[in-house]
Length: 439
Image (cartoon, rainbow, N blue to C red; front, side, top):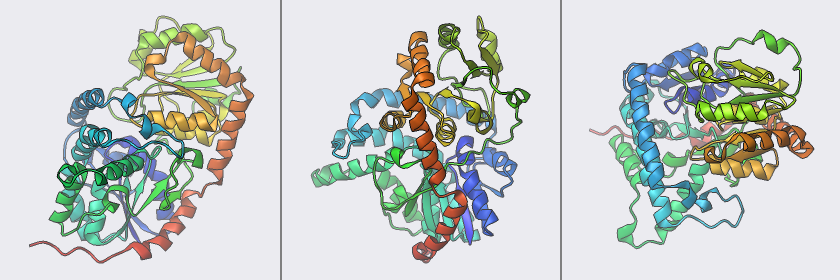
């Protein structure tokens, strides 16, 4: 069959889809990956066939726009603070749903603006590509809604591929539940209206499949799937680091328990954005300088030069392939990114998450329920707090045991090769005739 893969337009999201793309390709299927032009090198660098869709801009223009969008998202987050969304991050079975005002605010301030910025500019190109190539299956990264619209336009089966805990499906359910309780004149659904507008342009009627996919592929173990969706297909998280060289120091066993600490994104073009200022990182280093461990701290060169002092128990590196270093680690401190989080789970490493992303509170609570790590917000971070957390990660036998249990659960999940066979069986039941072209 023909499989079109549509990542959310960011390099880390391309990497997230590479193992599944290769599993389908090695199973004999034709695979193409459609993305913004500045992502095509990441696709072809992984040995996959790329299709350019969307804005033909340089990476520098893209970075400038992303900086503006980051500022916009920060402003939106201030208007829609996470502390007011406790029901969304509650993992108890009897959790209270979000109110109409809460759910509407999140969609209007956070979800829809980002969805439009990331999808509008590639929608026409992607539908044209799909109509020309006629895929049987479209796999689209979470929030890459253009993939769902393109699939519907050609009658292809389609699935949403998650990269984290599925906070958006429960958000949508809360929204629809609250919407049904409103008087007709108040039932405004901006996400539906946006998707329905695009779908109607290509002769497609809106359905909730355009929001959540006909089914969902989830790369996290059951502890990180707080809601039991019947259309979820679990798949084992398999890391793809991109081009990487194993550092020579990894050939030697660690002198003491090894801890990896990373606070920035090392696989996107452009300057690394650190979660914490260098001054705070220096405070952490000072506080843990006497601990019996080998701390591997990944920092970009400019940040390394700003450090006042590097303790004897610390090794500074610019970046490391996580799949190579984590099997040698006893603990990990990181910013909660997809790759850091998934690799820590896969290799059974107790972890300290320090994050502020929208899905961070839900991820934190699932990790706490699993008993395999600790979490704090950036505002809670100082030297003594991180030191206390590190001591516990290294000494608490229950944290280590639970991390190993999660590792075993990850490895027991279907590998991408197995999922490829499942997808073959599902496609026939979900395919439909193409939508009629509008005149």
